[in-house]
Image 1: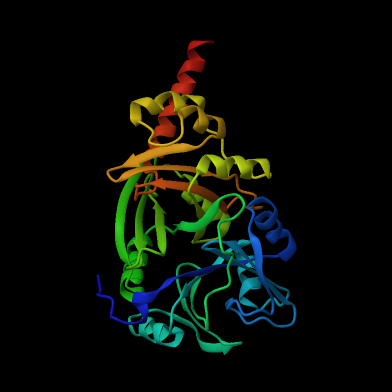
Image 2 (image 1 turned 180 degrees about the vertical axis):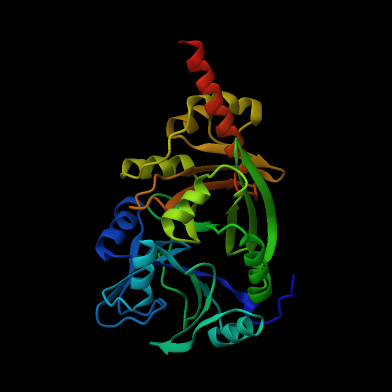
Length: 356
C-alpha cells in the first residue's frame, strides 16, 4: 500500500451520499416519511452536491445525525445526474468526501493516479472537486466554510450514521479497484473473504480510509460458479455500482420495529434460522424471540457481535436496498449469516419433506 501523506488525504470523512433520481419528490418521500430523516437543505442551497444546480436541476438534502443524503433530479439529459439515471435508474452516484482543503485533496489524489472528473470550483463558499471512483460513481471532495448541515441527533427511528456501502464490481475488477483506492486515496484493505453458498461464490475486500470513517465493501462474483445475486445486480444495474447502504443503529430492535411500522419492508428469514442461533452464539443483547419477531440476523467475530437486517428493494430494477446494523464490538460484516441462512433454508426444506 502506498503511504498516505501527512496532508488532506489523511483528513477525509464521509460528507454525504449523492443520489441521482428521476423524481425528486418521490425519491425523498421514503427517507422523510419512513426512515425519519429531516430535510436539511433544498436547491440551490450550499450543500455542495456535485454537478452545479441550474435550470431544470433540483436537489434536496435529507438526513439525521451523521447521515446526509443529497438527492438530485435533472431534466437536462446532459447533466451527470440525468445520465446516471438513464443508464442505471435511481442510485448512489457520488460518495462525497469532506476535507479542509478540496483543491489540495484533489491535486494529491490526481498526482497519485486518480482520474480527474471536475477540477476545483467554488459556489457560495463551498469548494468542490471530483475524481472517478468505480463504474459511473464519483468521489467529490467537499470543503465547507463551517460545519456541514445536519440534524443534531439520530432520526426518529434511531438511525444515526452510515456504517458502510456495499459495492458490486464486474468480474476481474476487484483487485484493480482495491489497488486504485490504496494508491489514489490512501485507503487500506482491512478485511477480505471468499463466500461460497451452494454452487455460488463471491470474493470481497473491504477498503477503508485511515480514520475508519469511510468503508466500502467491494464484491465481485466468481464466474466459474453458478450466477448469483452479484451477477444479477450487474446485469440489471448496467455495470458496477452501490448495491446497498448500511445505516447504523444503537438499538436495532427498536429501529426495525419503528421502520416496519412506517412501511419499510424487510426480507423474511426462515424460522429455522432462529432455531439454530443457540448453537452458533450466545446473544449479548436482545433475545432470540425479539430477533425472530422482526427477522433480524445475528453474527459474531473475534471482536464481538453484530445484528443486521436488509430491506426489500423498492427500486424498479431491484438493484438498490438498505441495511440496518447494530454493532456490539464486531468489526466484520455478517458473512456468517450467509452460511447460516443457507443452512436454515436446507433445514426448513428437510422438515417440509419429512412431513409430506
